[in-house]
Image: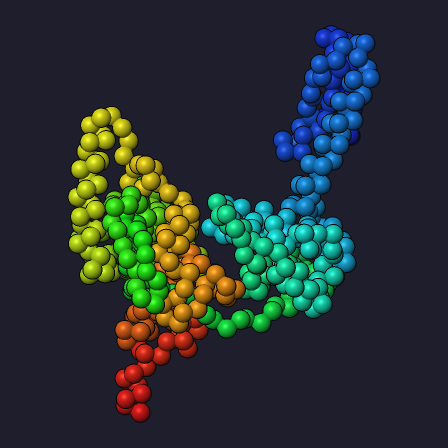
Length: 425
């Protein structure tokens, strides 16, 4: 049978190989730029089955071609400039492909998953003020359930706003590449009043005692609680609480900390020689979340030294037995942890944090609050440092946060740090 050759057109064809008495599909491989063939398990008498498999091949090839076209459109196509001919689906797929492998890939994926049910099928020309106003209303009517959680809560306006920001970034990326004839403008909902939840020292101490094996057996928020210390401790949760509450570091950075520098230069570590916690390694991608080093808090330093001694003894035993020891300060059954939300939520409930100590607001009934998540420890450290009168620029540096963000989020709620200015006025 004569070969089609590389100079023939790029259409796939169904052919019969006389030498092997077998049907084959000859096609052009877009990735390699060469002609290829796929052998079908069909003999001379199986023409109907060969036709069926060929039809299936064409459908799959068409789907693959369309998916490739979404993320890598054909250069020079004039329709790529026209907002009325470019779908939101295509722009999001284009943007998602470019975010793959970056530090923001996961959150971009979450936002795309939330955006598509509303925007799928719409063209960029349909992204206007009315549709942008309608999106948060629709989104806030849905419930978000965190991974591993038993119940969920209504999506907030702030979440819908962040998702629309991702849509705007996707449109901007497309516009920079293809120069849209009319670039849609994203109308964002107004930022809500900043009201981050935070824990008092007493609330934190209740959580810490629970993590160490304590149990509340009686009492209430008004009269105080009755305790017993006969419960099972949760060592990984205790370490997380101590580290995150003292340093105000983000959960992912806290969980990734080790005792030694990461060979790949990505994770952070504790350096006793300089009394420093390096939140990230030198090769970690830099994002808006920063992750600059901080000084080890005085109260935390002896605790860390004790943990280090304990871990080095355990490391020696594991390696002597031929095992592999994992260099993480926070481990669960000897393995690193990516999340701690379930343990944190259980401890928060056992510590009776459904009612806030500071103002007796019920977190369960207040849509603006909800039960604390691990990120509340960062909010708590920022708030408590300001309330103790630490200058805002020092707080911002310690938390690896911009001064603007610190003041916008916390400053107008807690003015204790302004006492010196008030006394001098």
